[in-house]
Picture 1 (cartoon, rainbow, N blue to C red):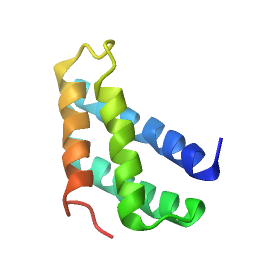
Picture 2 (tube, rainbow, N blue to C red):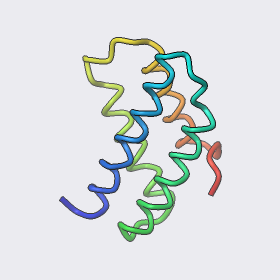
Picture 3 (cartoon, rainbow, N blue to C red):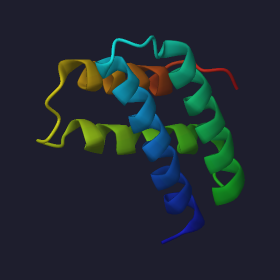
Picture 4 (cartoon, one colour):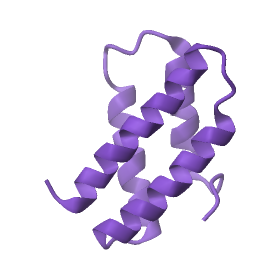
Length: 94
């Protein structure tokens, strides 16, 4: 596994943990924004990719998670969709 793939995998665990907060009705948006910002910075630094590539890689990982049949709670799926939108736009700080 490459350093970039390892970084994406590591940060997806954090993204999923923040998404699980939404199941407990915890406000997650600010936490998700910070996790995504840190993830993009770390992936681009450790993997030798630019920020746009890091965002795309992380967004693809979120898409894969959204495609899993085991997602049962709508709040979790909504939090992941929110993360996907943050990664697609300029909603996370550089």
